[in-house]
Image (cartoon, rainbow, N blue to C red; front, side, top):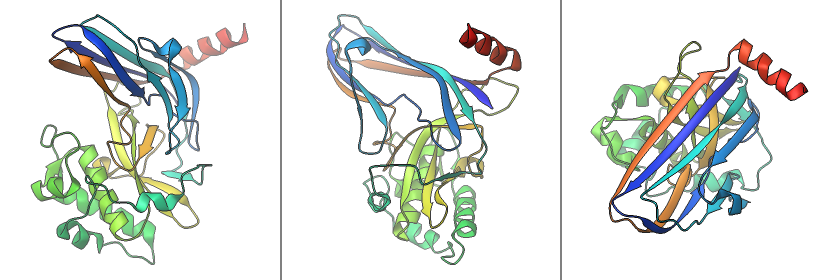
Length: 279
C-alpha cells in the first residue's frame, strides 16, 4: 500500500523569535515493512542544517536559523510504501544494542501495579504473553483524549485508568522492561481507513523477541502494526522519540498547532507518479 503523509507544525509567538534550535526527526526510515518513495522537509534554515543519525538510528536535521518572524512553520510530507508484516520488524542493522532498551526512564519506571500487571506475560510463549499484556492494558486504561499531559509517567496514567496511545505504549514498555525484555517507543503515523483521509499521529511499542527480532504492539488498537502504520522514530520513551525537539530565545508566549494528514495514494495517482518518474 502507498500512503501519503503531510505533517505540519506551526509555532506562533507574541513577539518575534531571536533564535531557535530545533532537532527535526521527521524522516521515516526504509525498513522491513516500509519503503520511503518520496519525502521532503520544509523549514526555515533547513538548507544550512546539519544532518546526522542519532544514537537510536533516527535521521536528524538540526536547524538554527535567526528570524524576526512571529511564527515558524515546519512541514514534512511524502509517500511511503508499506507491507503488512504482522508487526515483525526483525533484526534491522542498528548501532544501538537491544539491551539499551532495558533502561527504565522517569516516564517508564514501573510502579508496583505495573509490575503486578507484567506477571500476565508467559515467558514460555512471549508472543501470546505480550498479546495478553496488550489486552489487559486496553481493559484497564481507557482511551480518552486529553486525559493525560505530555510525557506523563506510565505509573500515573495506569493509576488514572485512562490515557492515549502515548500512555498505552509507555505502560507496555514499562511492564516489558520490568520482565527483562528490551522494549522501545515508536512514534509514527496511522491510516485509519483505506478510503478516507486520516488525521493520526500515533505511537506504539516494540519488544525484542528471540528468533523474531523487534515485534510491534499497538495497544490503543489492540493489534500488531499493519500496513496502515508508518514508522517515524524510535527511542526509550516519548521524549527521546519526539519528532521535533528544541529550544528558543525570544517570543515570550508560544502557541503550538500540529496538523497531520494521512491518506492512501489512489491507483491513478500512482500511475501519474510512475509516468513522471519515467520522463
